[in-house]
Image (tube, rainbow, N blue to C red; front, top):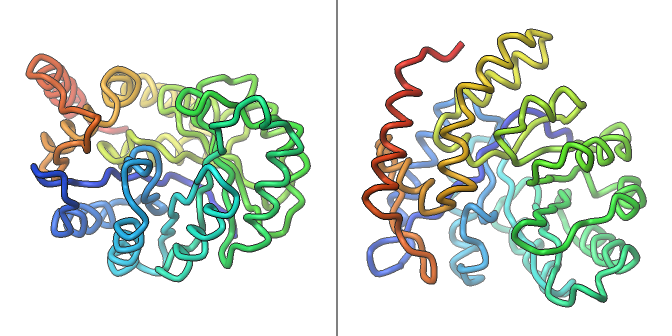
Length: 297
């Protein structure tokens, strides 16, 4: 499996009583499938995966598979703290129709999570998973970093096809790209450094911003791939203010508020997360309006 281009890690819509909203889930996915996105990731960090139980997760994947056509990718997050649970989640995701699984690093027992421990964990998951595995590093949330040395060992596993790195550290991204082999795709999750990552050799992105402005994110990728670097840089500068508001500044609640402004169903986050306040919502609204006033190049 080759994974290039832009995928959106889509949020999970909840009703006011924190139940999953299946109608909103389906309608949102239908709308994203009308864009040029390569596919979607469900139950990633943006999808509030740690706050969703296994039964809910399986149902979300099944419904997403009904909405995502066969020529698009459906990736499901199956990261768990134990290897056993990650294997079980990956098998259920495959049964529900996922094309691949995105496996977040375990993180609880930090001091024991050595390079060898990560290699054992991911090799076991990949051995058991019926679908390809994508490694997932998000140090800002987990407090651990997948060592490049572990990645260098894991790239040769036949069922590990890539890695998502969500941080903005270009040195680390460059090291990951250097460790990759043919058929192993490095995808990034930081929209403010998307073009820089592509310039280093990244194969695409799994970008929360792509939920909000999918066409612009795809255009950055296309410009960079075609060597239109001036156009890619200009569009990259254009998306950065909005990207920061819906990621590092306001996080998932901000992203959901932005989706609501655009006619998607964002919904409330699930506790302990809380909706953003009126001032933050107004700032996001203004940035969306400013972005919309400039044509996507």
